[in-house]
Length: 341
Image 1 (cartoon, rainbow, N blue to C red):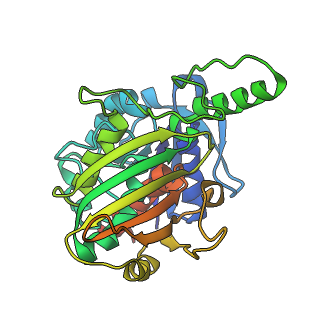
Image 2 (spheres, rainbow, N blue to C red):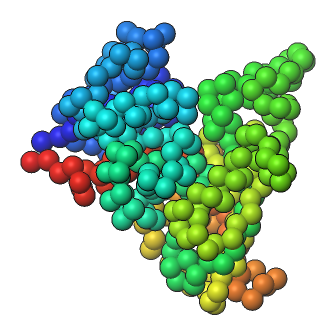
Image 3 (cartoon, rainbow, N blue to C red):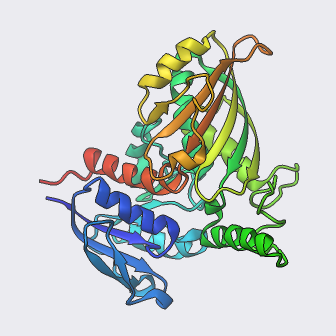
């Protein structure tokens, strides 16, 4: 016996990926509804490679009563309207926007890291999915924190344009093409040219000079993993279509060698260690596309602090950073709270 599942925002990058992953993982679905805005009403959406197609329904007049869970990928403004409506109707919302992440009554979940926190979902009937750059990082940090207690993290991200949605991907493609044919290159989605460039600016600037994306990584890591961890981030947009990369420097309370860290990471859930210390013996973003894992490479001791490690972390941001994590939350919710049969 399966669940009655809603995917809201089904026509976007993340919504489509949610449908693909639900199909790939054979999530137990008795009935599926795919929602989007009125302009997409009536369009047909593929349910992964199952051959099934579903007609898009208008989220504005959809009745969530009787539905078990809804995976939301519709942005904060629309979520503010529709998530409380779904939750009040008894449908558990798993939200990919930033709206509820720091709400103390809403659990912020990465299933490999803090699965027990999901038990608090009943307060609001809403569960938050973390920021894409945070999700893959905390998967990497969790086994190290458990073994040696992390004190401080310094992270620089190399984030793909798909993190900015279809418009970001289109802009990289169009600018690259224009450069090759000699046409002018004008930024629209990004603040500067993204093709053959990097931009140290994601989301809006805050008063202290950091960006909101950087603040999210700090605040969300504290909520998911440990409020005592100190973290500083520099978030950079790079001309890669899919796949976020992170250079992570870790300072710990207790000693943990690179060799021991490799052993821990090799056995940790959700992680694939690829660290051969030779030409090509590491993972780049293009190799992680379509994969579920968070890939770790370049694990090494940092001799500049007493107990330090450095590592390279790569993941498909549309999967682990968004859609996969949401589906994993749905699976966890089903196992722990919405058991059928």
